[in-house]
Image (cartoon, rainbow, N blue to C red; front, top):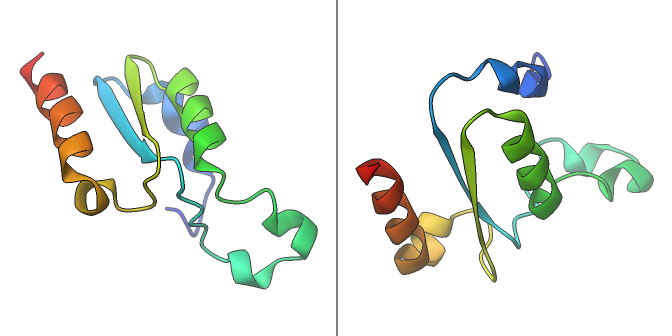
Length: 90
C-alpha cells in the first residue's frame, strides 16, 4: 500500500490498541533520492510523523526513542522491549 495509496487517511479506522515505537533519528523515506531538494527536506521526519500518526490512530500510544534510527529493536533492544512488553500485558 505504501506505493499505491496514502494510507494515513485510513488511520482513524484502526480499531485495536496500537503501539508506535519510533526511533527519533529515523529519516527513512522511500523515493527520497528521486525528489527535489525542497521536497526531500520534508520527507522522513519521524519525530513529527510519529506524533501525527498517534493523534490520528484511536487508542495509539507513542514511544519515541532518542538517539535511535530506523531499527529500534536492533539498535536499542533494551529501550524497545520494555515498552512492548508493558503494552502487550495490558
